[in-house]
Amino acid sequence: MANLKDHLGRPVVAVTGIGVVTSLGVGKADNWEALTSGKSGIHPITRFPVDHLNTRISGMVDFLESSSKGASALTYELAETSALEAVSEAGFEIGDFDGPLFLASPPVELDWADRFALYAADKEEGSASERLLRVARNLNSLDMFDSSQFGSIADRLADRFGTRGLPITTSTACASGATAIQLGVEAIRRGECDRALSIGADGSATAEALIRFSLLSALSTNNDVPEKASKPFSKDRDGFVLAEGSAALVLESLESALARGAEVLGILRGCGEKADDFHRTRSKPDGSPAIGAVKAALADAGLSEDEIDYVNAHGTSTPENDKMEHLSLSTVFGQRIRKIPVSSNKSMIGHTLSAAGAIEAAFSLMTMREGVIPPTINYDNPDLSIELDVVPNVKRKAEVRTVLSNSFGFGGQNTCLVMAREPV
Image (cartoon, rainbow, N blue to C red; front, top):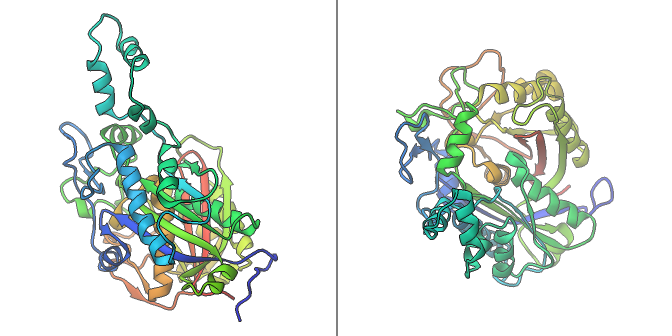
């Protein structure tokens, strides 16, 4: 019989439901088929005009009802769609989930359509900001107010799924999705709940976001061949591709899952985090915070470096971040890192920002269950200074018992997850 406690005497945390939405499609089945086939979801932007922009491609999700209704509406629908799949797979009634909700979502801003509507509603003299404030004070509808509040998406999801307690919303940049999972794991370990719903969702690939990242020189400008734009660890990588998506995990104590006869889809063995105070966007050149996060996750999992079978890399396709990730992995794993498969899902779906850590955790769990490692596509020009087995261009069958999934975020927020196929 499996141990119900981990090496530190805490409840073992199982995954009993998974849901995914990316630019590759809705649901685990479609995403997994596309991902393992090396299909790219990167495409030209059609949601808004891109004339005179340096970057005109993205991994936007353009096939949902709210895809053209603004970041808040799309982030909610992405989260709801993935959570419906996860909660249903776990065997819970929609609307009666007996556990807390942890949501990773992007910082919320007033959508441009609402800003223009407010501005147009006032014809009096004064600056734009004065006119906006004047109209806002007289606004009789709460819809616009609610949609611009950071916690409003989680509140709606809590009502939809019947979660318990105050829903928690977190935004730790590119590490957000992994952070939401970590919060769920920790709540179960502390005995505060038997299960938790952790979601990472991001529908904020707006024109404003595109321009902001372009000004940071962070985005790929390979517009002519969108599907070749994201090329992690390649010598000619030139930036990440802005994208959208969502993933949801139902986390549950192994004891609870076994007691109700649920199928165990994987185990969350360990979580590690480490702050980086070097720069608002850049990572510390020596990689020490990333190294610390990886080591912390391994220690929390009670595993040594020799016990990791696969690394789901952060792998953004930016020149500096990929170099830093290689430095951190080679420091922790030594010469063995050359033999460990290290692939990047972002080569196909782009960088889903707040959702990335959750989506990559979902794909990591599926990698272990299916015995197939998704490739890093577009690996046609190797960077000889980055000696990694990136599973180039073609999927690989392999027995994967454990996975390290990395999330190294802007602003120095680093979170790593260690997952296992089966309980000990």
